[in-house]
Structure formats: structure tokens, C-alpha cells
Image (cartoon, rainbow, N blue to C red; front, side):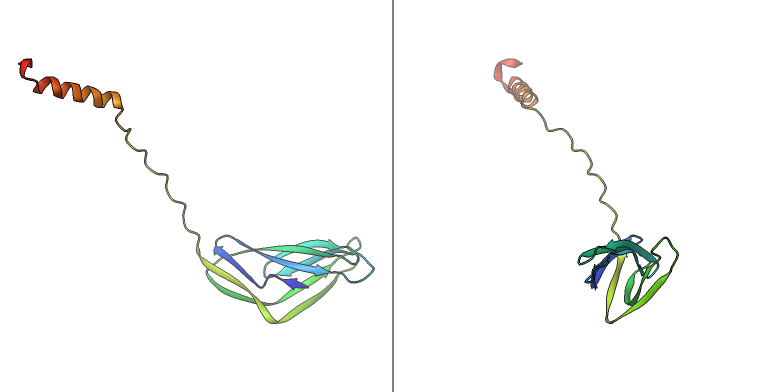
Length: 136
């Protein structure tokens, strides 16, 4: 089993841990649940295959949280049995909880329309008419 060692997230959002499960046996492993902090993800791993299970953890506050234990559990088949194990890691994985997410930038104010060439031509001809010697 491998896990994403560090996850960054903004306070008030969600962090996604990815757990990679590998099944080296000849038996399918169904309905495997990975529980981490206050959240869980579920998946199945076919015989001789690997599968990723994502656990989406809500991020309530800023700071750093070190996770050194998570739980694997199953209720297969049909919920008749309940089996679990706690997995402790010597090198804990880290959830970095950052500052609140920045607010989006407000839309830009519309620009004033640029003068057209026709307006400029009218102004130029008007200025020429007012300053010409025979126009008085």
C-alpha cells in the first residue's frame, strides 16, 4: 500500500488523499474501505492487480496535520462479516492546511470607448474652419 505523502488544501475546502492498494493474491478483494481522519473511500482490488482509492477529507482550519494511522476495513460478503485493521506508518503522511482560499478577482470595469477616426476628422475640420483667415 502506498499513500500520497503530502496533500495541500485550502481551509474550508477538501483535501484528497490517494491510497494505492496492491493485491498480490489470487483472490479478489472487494469492498475495501479506507478510513482516514473523518472521511472514507471505498473500492475493490482484483487478484494480482492494483487500484487507487481516494479519500476526500474536509479541511476545517489552517495548520499542518500529520496522519500516522489509518484504517482498512471490509464488510464483504453482504455485510455478514466485519473485518478491519489499523495501519500505522513510521513516517506519517502530511496534510498541509493552508490559509483560506483567495477570493476571485472582481471583473474589470469596462473601458470608455476609444474615439473613432470619423470623430477625429470632424474635430480637425472644425478646428481648421475656425482658424482659417476667411471664416470670420
